[in-house]
Amino acid sequence: MPRWRSGAWFLRERCYLIPGDSALGYRLPLDSQPWAAQADLPWVQPADLTQAFPPLAPYRAPGAAFGPSEGAADAAAAGPNVEPSRAPLAAANRAPALHESAAWITRTAIGAEPRNGRLYIFMPPISALDDYLELVAAIEATALELRLPVILEGYEPPKDPRLATLRVTPDPGVIEVNIHPAHSWAELVDQTTHLYQAAHETRLSTEKFMLDGRHTGTGGGNHFVLGGATVADSPFLRRPDLLASMVAYWHNHPALSYLFSGLFVGPTSQAPRIDEARNDSVYEIEIAFAELQRIAAAQGSNACPPWLVDRLLRNLLIDSTGNTHRAEFCIDKMYSPDGPTGRLGLLEMRGFEMPPHARMSLTQQLLMRSLVSRFWQQPYRPARLKRWGTELHDRFMLPHFIWQDLGDVLDELTQFGYPVSADWFAPHREFRFPRLGDFTACGVKVELRLALEPWHVLGEEGTPGGTARFVDSSLERVQVTLTGLVDERHALTCNSRRVPLQPTGRVGEFVGAVRYRAWNPPSALHPTIAVHAPLVFDLLDGWMGRSMGGCQYHVAHPGGLSHDTFPVNAFEAEARRLARFFRIGHTPGAMSVPDEDRNPNFPFTLDLRRKAVA
Picture 1 (tube, rainbow, N blue to C red):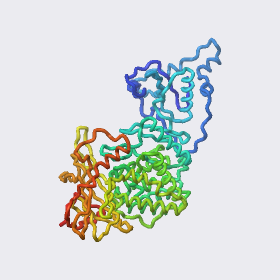
Picture 2 (picture 1 turned 30 degrees about the vertical axis):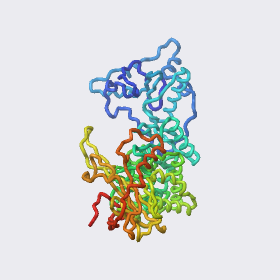
Picture 3 (picture 1 turned 90 degrees about the horizontal axis):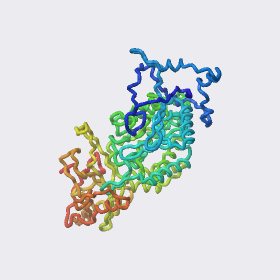
Picture 4 (picture 1 turned 30 degrees about the horizontal axis):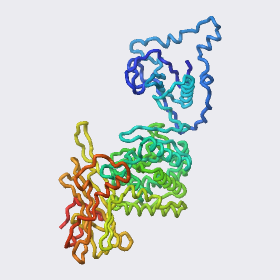
């Protein structure tokens, strides 16, 4: 048998497997192997990815790569009539004594099993990429000569910066694809468009539709990973102020956190902002930024230790439970002290949801590349981070202010020399905040759009499968935009409650929001509050004391029916949304304008759960 630098593997002549069609290594009778102490087990130590790796050796034919075994070479040297010694083989096959550690027994082996007309090869754990590629080359040559289809399973090749890896992982409800890094914009465009096209050709979709017609992402996320070709080339390790600039900029511009995210936002989502985790996180992270600048000034920007970013920000870029992975800026794989697999110099942006089209994804990536390039040339160092407080979940839940904030970001990029147009992000706005309907009365136009609503995790409850924590998704929010309004004359009510309106800076244009309970789940916040649907909007004339017009919005089928199937495409989904909106059904006749009950903590939103103050 050939011998490898990482150890020796032998094919067993006979092995009794547990029946099944899973990978061969899962069905091996490993408990039948002789006992060995922990120190004698063949541990595979991963290589340090921060070191310099030489170029991989060129491909060699299997015969030239392996060469003759030592036993065959000794036999040829001794002559044709001399039998090779069997002493080493006998020593390796001896049975261990009582309580003796069987350190000499080889425990890693390559296995083969025919299943479903193919030969499955179980790859053993290998510590060096060169050895893994030589073994794959031998398998490939054998399969080519025998004309036998072969499928590799078992252990993955060792992590190595010289290896480009494409991972396809089945997750509940989605298929997660981790594509290999792109070194140029052209390569990034090619990878993204190819991935979307391949998914379409295999009858997979990058979007989904809910029963009520809501158009959403797949739910699996569309996280962007930024880094360098090698760990040492990572811009976040070479310039720690780059990550500080991004965190501070994302904090001061909430549109970057909410425009591209999924339905589930807030402190218990998959990617909470730093000011959604703890109330004092903004204050603490300002101290961390100051320490970063102090150390960089003392040692020089090119002499900062690579572990500095992890040590300063690891305990701040977290969620409310301390989870470092569930954060908008995830640095688990930047320079973690846990091991070499976490020291890759990578930053994962988790606040992005899968858009339905490849060009929408490329627009997001173009914005990311532009901001990184800008902060590399000119760091973003505000004197003080904004304390948004309750304004974060009031103002920036509405599409109008998110779009306004994004416009500020794009204007700054344009002034810096990167002309990014706001029109490129119009599909994101329509996808994220679809129009629910509109009506016009006496020269005043009222438009309804879906807004964001932060969902909260509830307390633990016992279920048949164990303990669970439900999420209250029964709350929804809509934005109302009024154009041509005379603020001293007109008012808008929802279910006979006056909607607080804010001027947008344009003459006659006002914006407000309504928060309501859409449905009544078994577990929810305030379970005694009933459903507020349908929402009845009335445009009131305070001078005449009457209703000029209005509309009705239903959160479910207006006839009380339920759809049995999901929408087949975006057109059917939009039809279901528009079918729940009626330009009739408002309150007719004379009406008095109710007093405005504005919540000082949430001045932009009318919360129908909160009783009106007399």
